[in-house]
Amino acid sequence: MKICYVSSSGGHWEELMCLNELCQKYDCFFVTENGGQADEYKGKNKLYTVSQINRNEKGFFKKFIKLFFNAGKILKTEKPDVVITTGALVSFPFCLVGKLKRKKIIYIESFARVDKKSLTGRLVYPFADLFLVQWEPMLKCYPKAEYVGGIF
Image (cartoon, rainbow, N blue to C red):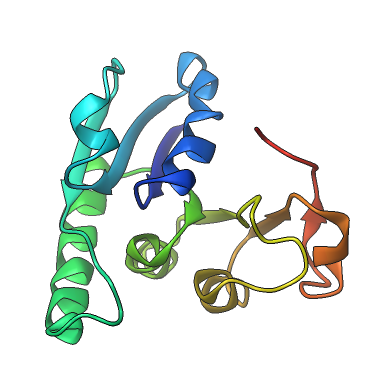
């Protein structure tokens, strides 16, 4: 089995790195934003970087469309069986393109989300194969989710 791990930089990346030990058991690769932790990543697995994206910036729509093309290209090259993400917006195109390519999608709602949905969580929830929350009150927001406790 091959796993694609994707997240934005910052806290989402830190949470994703808590799952890094799965790479000892499965073939995997990572996707995150340029700069920051991507520059510091010293893992033995392949790392792809994409442009940072902010929905409030000028030119967002053009960058977002480009991100879908990048996601398609990376997923076509790597052919993962599963896409695992902790968010945020940079991961949505990978989840949607992955789903269209019949890949399993596993979304882990951020540890920072205790009782309110994230934007990416709202977008991915309807089609995720497995949706995990780290706080029990989040089950009210996402009734079909599974509570797993903190991954930190």
